[in-house]
Image 1 (cartoon, rainbow, N blue to C red):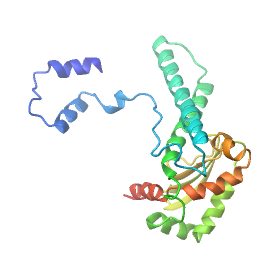
Image 2 (image 1 turned 30 degrees about the vertical axis):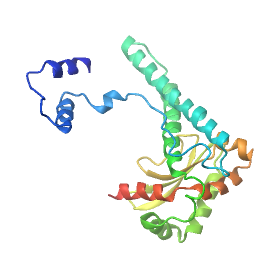
Image 3 (image 1 turned 90 degrees about the vertical axis):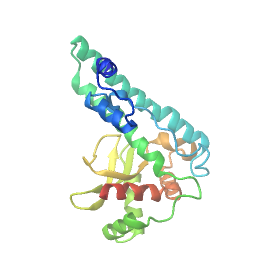
Image 4 (image 1 turned 60 degrees about the vertical axis):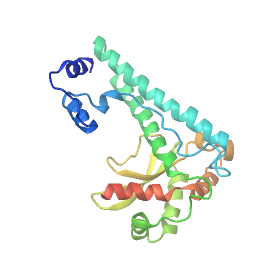
Length: 238
């Protein structure tokens, strides 16, 4: 990238009077892209304050979940990326199987948490039933919202060990399909867009609900952000 920026700096082509879009386009032709600037993962900020999900999720529970657990997956994924870079540069051999398995786990943890936070809404602003495109798709596939809610809750409650329940959407069949994810990276349907996701690792609820996962799943329906889920589906359908 440094060499490319120097080329841009010393180029005989003048960018004076060029718009921001024009300059960006010229940089992209030289390979100076946003992708190169952000080669590592970053934990997103929450779209609300830590206390805003109370009484369903306490301030302390949410803070630890976001600051400690989510950050742990970000750190884990970035450390493995750096490890891979060093090995390639130095010509060292790695245990590729275990390295990629760990990378999949940490990237999955980061991505799922990044989807999870915005599909929650502050108390009084979430819950209820979905409307619009998503509401229609759920009613068509599951017969009713209550039918969907029952199946999703069962998926969340029955995850073996730690994992997630998700509502995803298949573009080939145009169906919303429930996905039961083990850990962060097992039983995922490739390319399916996740519309809502619920973390049922104990770290998501242990301060508030101890080992009563079912109570946490019940609480989720009070703060699920259907507006965000509907926007995700609308964006997918174009």
